[in-house]
Amino acid sequence: MAIRSLRPTHRRTPPKFFFLILLIVVPTCIFGIYTDYPKISYFFRPLWDKPPTPFIRLPHYYAENVTMDHLCRLHGWSLRAEPRRVFDGIIFSNELDMLDIRWHELYPYVTKLVILEANTTFTGIPKPLFFASNRSRFAFAEEKVVHDIFPGIVVPRGSHIDPFKLEKKQRIAMNALLRTAGISHGDVLIMSDTDEIPSPHTVKLLQWCDGIPSTMHLELKHYMYSFEFPVDYSSWRATSHIYGPRTFYQHSRQTNYLFSDAGWHCSFCFRHIEDFVFKMTAYSHADRVKRREFLNYARIQELICRGDDLFDMLPEEYSFKELIKKMGPIPRSTSAVHLPAYLIKNVDKFRFLLPGGCLRPQD
Image 1 (cartoon, rainbow, N blue to C red):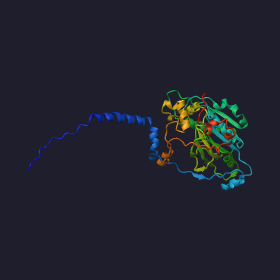
Image 2: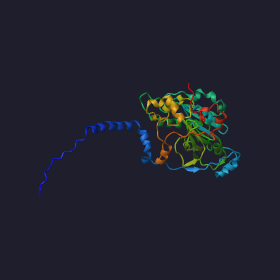
Image 3: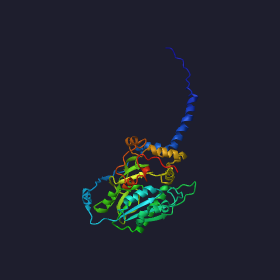
Image 4: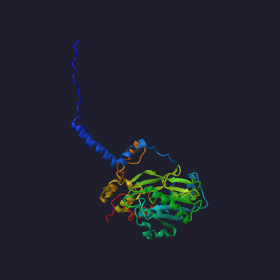
């Protein structure tokens, strides 16, 4: 049997261009992950995060020319002999137009309009007192307004502080202002941000019906930039409370009850581009401004009219199905039905909030 000659074996040396590719691809991937980490994280959110406990959704019945007694009974409640007092408590930044609409909608039904504004942003930047300097615009509601200024914390340039901690301090301060306003046990307290507006018929139910839950989240139809871009019904942070010794001002999950279709939430619904820039750098999610060009006026205007995301973010969803369904621009709506009455009565004043009005005035 012939003996095979043994040939020396040599490993093939990887070609030089392979190392060159690695040299290019690896740093590029690392840079991409660093710069677009939030987007990558949100895309894989269904893998690393679990959805919160589902709400117990309470049906909401309403139609024009239906008696309050009938509406209360439809909800399983009963009509009161006299209405409860209602206190509307908001933390205010710079949303002057949304405040105008909110207070005109709620004014006939509330006892006090309680508003707290700070002299700094949640990110620790000094800011003007927008309400105080524009108070004359709200003279129609003056006798119901209880206003105070919260002394914020100025964060030195180059330093960082958790904006959610500053926001929490301001919300805690609201408790004392509510007591100053004269709130009592058994009154209704609405806790929400300025742009989270309960509908008048929701407030009337809270006023007139006995048997309502002591705490309910209010499901609000969510809009972005204007009422031309309806997103969904994902807004739930607004709450109503029957005020008691354990009622504390918050903007987080407080109960499992969610009262359906209870109003409107119009996010980033500003008249001027400079107001968009202010909020983008001022609110608790200011870390989403990853690049300086995010604050470019022309870019912001283009995104507003497209219904696209200002921060180049993906939707915050817990399933790939919902995430993919909501990717891309918000579909434009041509409907201006079932919107705040004051908005419709003053179309010329608020054209930028209605279908076809996406272009903001150039100052």
